[in-house]
Length: 404
Image (cartoon, rainbow, N blue to C red):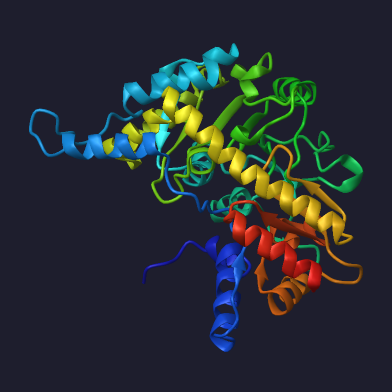
């Protein structure tokens, strides 16, 4: 008889946002007259920018003619998009990243799960706590995390790096030595950032102990303060220890279009083996590439019109973040985030768990957020709201919370 991958059976419950979706659907079904404002999942709400729409239409028209039709995409992605990314995201910032070190994909979520396939099963991972659940869950599926303790909500073979109010919601160097370190800045879920000097410490540490950093830069477009790095390759030595994940979902609204990239410098090696070669082999074997139409839309992100339009869109969401941040502070909550990221991280009222606050907010204000404990044990006692709703819904949600 066939057998299943028993590592999947170790996963507790369902994926965080699936659980939230089911709870909200059940509440809506029981209370059809209630209006619900969703500020939980980090999904964008503004339409695609005009420059992107124009590029999509142009690419669709190309597909209608034999001389401009495109079939399978090149393994790494089309050169026009990789070159645009290399120049605008890296070389213009003084970072030595070349187009052939950029692998185009259909999103950073997929890449963050798939990248661990090129590493041995006995590598130990270190994650921030709280953390984006995909980093841990995909390593559970791969059999790399050991056993789960439901009391502490931790895995025996995972190194947790608590990100608490005392640490400014930033991780400290781990006491145990990891092989793979997951970092995400600006951070999901806390919205925190670290300085270039702080990130340099992580790069130096990884090179010193022989670890690799998987750096999720999905929210770099929301950075507004000086001294906060937009890419880990701003740090000296990052080419020998860091893989970076990039997403078009948050900066360009591609959550439903799907486009991302993973940057693997050729200088990262395990012995004589380049990780670039392994990822290229995996990419070529298991992936057929993001559609030509979508990659042309991605190229438009780097046009002058695209840059200007997306700057306005980011400003729209960050204005929402300001509304949420200030409104919650006025209502007496302890709040952080919302400055360099579209996430606001708040402390739940005394004596209330994060899931209790989720229910309280849904039932009394009709507002959906994300319980902090869903991101890890150090997230207990906290709650995440996103700035990705419409301005009108954001204002209405904060008004409801104030009246709650």
